[in-house]
Image 1 (tube, helix red, strand yellow):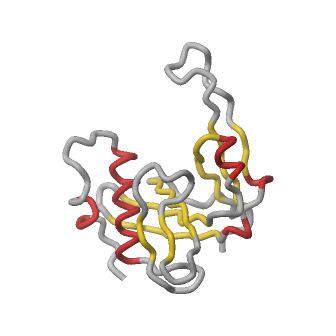
Image 2: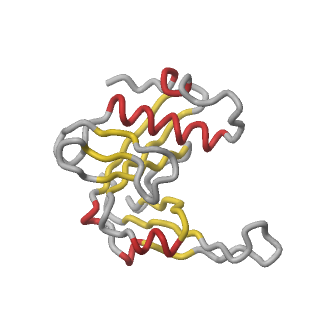
Length: 155
């Protein structure tokens, strides 16, 4: 398998500046090109931006997948994975509709270092941990994100 992100990075608009956004989108392109559906081995198709909680769907089994990219190690010492999620209530309302494809990348080498998948049936409401809402002085005052804590995914 080709772990290079170079081709995927070439698909990102030149005016994007945020490195996390750039590499997150590049990892989504990489998934579509190189990774089969973790459920059935079928073809994953990247969905348009801003589809709530879902980044890819399988053309064979219709499984939905959310991509999460990080330059940090995916697994903690205890084998758990803690991922920054999206808006808390939206994420909570969509539990069971998607699995997670987590990718660790190396920005210096522009390549994928690790890929972990967690199927939808392993993600429960207990895995969704609310974050503190943004302060009243914040641009998006009151907005509340979440973490997704997945235990026992490490080997």
